[in-house]
Image (cartoon, rainbow, N blue to C red; front, side):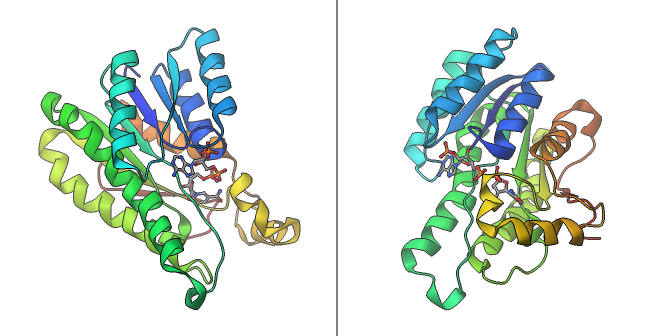
Length: 244
Ligand code: NAP
């Protein structure tokens, strides 16, 4: 795959696995992170040591200027971005009546605003060359309701809306926009649920296990590949059958 990829939130978890898989497939990769610099730098170094191209760049995806600067850095080091994976996200459990303005705005700014910022930063080049691929990471909780995760679920449902509408708008420019909706994936994000709940969620999953970051990376790599050349505006629920 001969693309320069930007993967947001790639220091850990799902984003990290996506960056690794895309690098393995031949992409040059910009690894975005917020707090875990050492992990992001170590991943970039590991990719380079295997003969690939990668850099790690810090940016809060909610910060438009920082995202613009990150994209310019990626362009200078690797070339123009033609594959964007909007993966960075935050989650948390809180009852709806207790959500503060600050919390509500932060969920929207990171999970939805982050995707908007990154897309708008890479789009001028994609439009210029009439080529590009965007993959948004939603969630099963964007497809069905999630008690005590209303703000999170709203942002994930909005990413599906963004995917569908933008896919139509950008199709004439041969820019494909798709979405992966992961089920319960065993990363740092879900550890707050506790081992007992995670065991129950694995049992609730028809395929009988939690997902791995690699399960999601495979789905993203498929959308990014030429084999998905006729797919746009689609939501692929990579969830072990959780939503059927
Ligand atoms: P995670 O383990 O908590 O990792 C989150 C990643 O996002 C980290 O690399 C973190 O960077 C980065 N990040 C967070 N806020 C950021 C910001 N403002 N700017 C830039 N980077 C930021 O989460 P995960 O489980 O891998 O989830 C990745 C994505 O998949 C999220 O969008 C999540 O909603 C979605 N998802 C996850 C699950 C699941 O069960 N795990 C299910 C459905 C969907 P630093 O560590 O460097 O700060």
